[in-house]
Length: 119
Image (cartoon, rainbow, N blue to C red; front, side):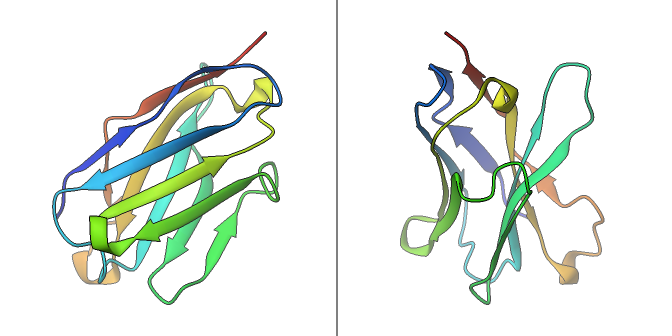
């Protein structure tokens, strides 16, 4: 396992941008899936984006075209560029890592970072 720490959250106006980072305690190069989830008040945690080690990415429909997930393997970090933010993007954002070799359905999680989109 690795430990994950998110950073970069904050308050931003609608239409603005934030860049979240997920710092890992060790190499993420071989971890199959590095992902971002979010959880808004009163809602279940939902998938937002994933980057797999083969270079593919997938996004929730609600953020497609606005958010970009990327890996910086040299820095053991996953970045999440969020553009054109909307109030409905307000949530705690969690970094997640998982790999089929771990036999862990949920993978490992960071502590979360708050993103608030409001005027």
